[in-house]
Amino acid sequence: MSDMEQSKFFPEIHGNFGFGCMRLPMKGGKVDYDEFSRMADAFIGAGFNYFDTAHGYIGGQSETAIRDCVAKRYPREKFLLTNKLTDPYFKRQEDIRPFFERQLQWCGVDYFDFYLMHAQDKNNYEKFKRCKAYETAYGFKQEGLIRHFGISFHDKADVLDKILTEHPEIEIVQIQFNYVDYEDASVESRKVYEVCEKHGKPVIVMEPVKGGSLVNLPEQADAILRGLHGGSNASYAIRFAASFPNMAMVLSGMSDMAQMEDNLSAMREFRPLDKTEMAAVQRVCGIFKGLNLIPCTSCRYCVEENECPKGIRIPDMFSSMNAHEAFHNWNTAYYYENVLIGGGHGKASDCIRCGKCEKVCPQHLPIRELLQSVAKTFE
Image (tube, rainbow, N blue to C red):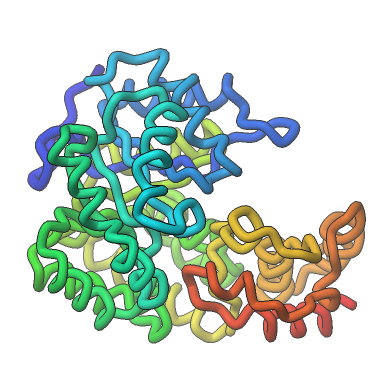
């Protein structure tokens, strides 16, 4: 294992780059264990050690894949593992411990290095308070079942300020942070980050490439980054997020070895963006703002944790809509008609407006209205 600088916030973390296990390599609807094992080997071999999961990721397959491809193949001291307590999996305080104990079993470990209250916002935070979830999970730390206690967060800065004020025991905060969302009024990445600084909480970054949106850029934006004659589009996005002083970790959800190798090349010997690179990123951000794209990150909570009653492939439809707007690609209409609908999957116009998807959307998107726009475009 190569040498890697220890985190200034948590000495057990090696480097500032983590493996987010929400978008693992897939084969026939199952996690591709061979590919995931190769990726884990490359990640650990490069000196990194932080893996992130949650029970809702890939319908529970993320946890068991980590068990089989990481926990069974490496000594426990070689890797750090983060898991989360997610809203749909408990209804009362008494449900939390049995669920937590099953998570340990699913992951094949005796403890979690970090345990987060998942996807906190002003709505589910009230449920977590009512069920004494924070107190229960913090008790796991006192028992030695978790090493560090924190939250992942999807809401406005004032909500985070309230949570951190009411729960000073929180050690770390995971937030959505990328150069497009930095000044976005709906996400408030900058303001949320500044609240973390105010409370002295180190930050873990999720969605640094905004669900892949900052990889496959519109032609004009892509040309700007290519003009730097440096790394990949993904590398600039990840390095942007890691350039801020209070960042303990930047997660990347990688689904093949090529993505792993590209990310490792940018983060193995990390350097912050320089002034020229930062100016280029700001120009790209300006182009994105002019496209009026749907800010979906393809987290898939709307379809995996909530199961749309009409089987509408919401994230994929939004991705096609964005590709249509950004690239004016006729293939998107073909993809919509021949891949996204049929076989038990509904059209955008089949939406019954039940609102289940909107309740779990971390981006707080008006999904029902957006599906009407998709239907108008493709149907």
